[in-house]
Image (cartoon, rainbow, N blue to C red; front, side):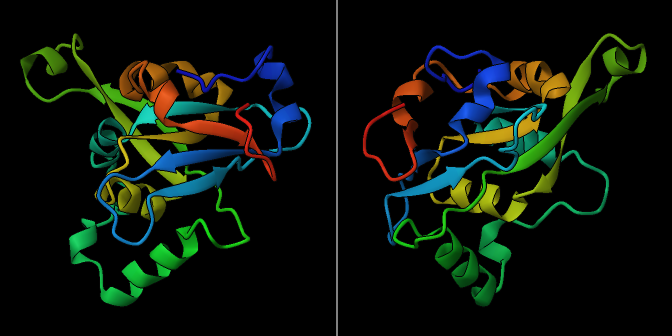
Length: 180
């Protein structure tokens, strides 16, 4: 699902360039949420924010065959974990960008895939793979990601968050506590 923006169409999304998404973390001892902002904020951007199920996204990302699929967070060295934890800290004045992905499909393994009936999603991270994997490890169920508009429908179909994610993820204007 695309993240709801008040009275807006995809063409009006750049007007919300100052929007900050607050993502709750269920299993994190350092902080209980992170803040994320859009990657593409200029007028005329052809990218959309899609609220995704983080587990589904990472299953699709693990299928990427470009040799840049990260190991689980538990296998990262302590300096990497500390660095990403500090980078995402909501008390920092800098707001990190949300992950930016691309998605495609390929034939699924097995007979149905071989004959072209069954397909599976493949996600490649353009930016934010460490963030996404760390957030999943920290207990985030859902997360906003940015994707090119031509791939947004496929991303929603294969990795879209459940409807109750809309109440868990808050989108606020930067510098404001009011919901967008």
